[in-house]
Image (cartoon, rainbow, N blue to C red; front, side, top):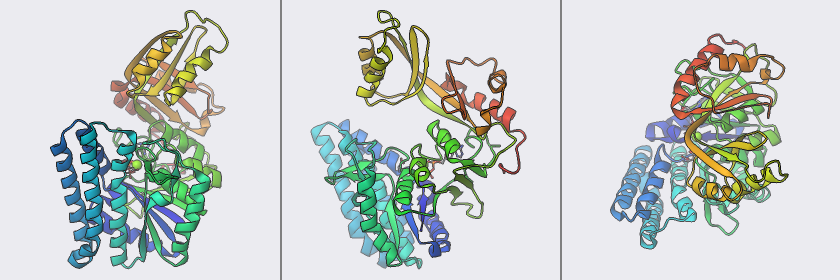
Length: 457
Ligand code: ADP
Ligand code: ASP
Ligand code: MG
């Protein structure tokens, strides 16, 4: 079997869903399990509804919900025609009624918990999977929609829940496998799961890729296909550099670094399950299905280019901690990291001197509280609007003089932190967020003006 995951733009409207039905039909002999995102932009809108409700703006919240309901009904009726749509409509009505109830509840209590956030945010995938399954069935694909909340068991770390793999695998074997066994195509919503007690959770924004990998690893897929709106993983974000090249093959390790450092095309956790089971991951374009995309595999082909790609991760805050009293005391770093751990705040990049430590975190609301806790240990300052730029490639190992080439290409840019060596396949550094477009495009033109045709297209 294989897993085919379709992102938001690949299911954005009736035409897009019609297109993916044709793509899935071609793969039927390989027994696909289909994972779908919410229709494009719906998760953002659900978050906006929840925020409006929390701010007490009941009318705005319900108006946004009404327009989302209409968009889904319009898409479903275009795909299904009147008779079939009328069969699905009561179920969709019930889902959207429950959304209205949730929003009213948030207004009533005047507070938005992470648990309610997940309940609202997950609606997009709950309904998209039903619409896609019904549309497939009408197009000659024997599809069954599966409620992912019954299959993906997570902890209760709402808004970025962690999958419990043993239980999830057992549920996949119990629920999804028999559907395949009957020759049917399971259609599951990505991104969503539930705790053992059945309370809805989500895996974090962009998490449908991760769902695809969890399902693929759990069911022992031969291949995991991530269908999106670009031709594959590119040498950099094509929105930043229109002349970015498609990468034909890349290693798990390289692709994981790129995803972690901002290449939005893959959710950073996607490759872990695939690596464990050594399952190839393909990134493909649902608007250009004949293109061969990017193949992510254990060992990628050697290339004459130093780097495979450049990624940039924005919304970074740099935190500088200067030890005053605890100079050189052992246990100092531990106590600093404990503060971040208590706030469940992951640290990306670290650099130390004898008396100070600089580190980066994703900008978030808890920075002020973290800084206050750190201030009990040392002097602290922090600054947002930074970005990490990361150049990735296995050729970094054992090629001398690379850092000089990178920084020589951008001599006039202020660099706040540098890191090389942790993985031996990336060089990363921190700059002001506003410098990202020019830095990425200058580096791209230096390192990718000529590309190895064996590896890049
Ligand atoms: P989906 O909705 O299908 O999950 P995403 O928007 O999450 O799609 O990811 C695809 C987008 O990722 C592309 O449209 C592109 O703008 C962005 N992107 C960032 N870096 C890269 C990269 N290196 N290669 C390809 N796409 C990238
Ligand atoms: N719909 C979710 C989001 O927009 C998950 C995903 O599409 O991967 O974040
Ligand atoms: Mg995505």
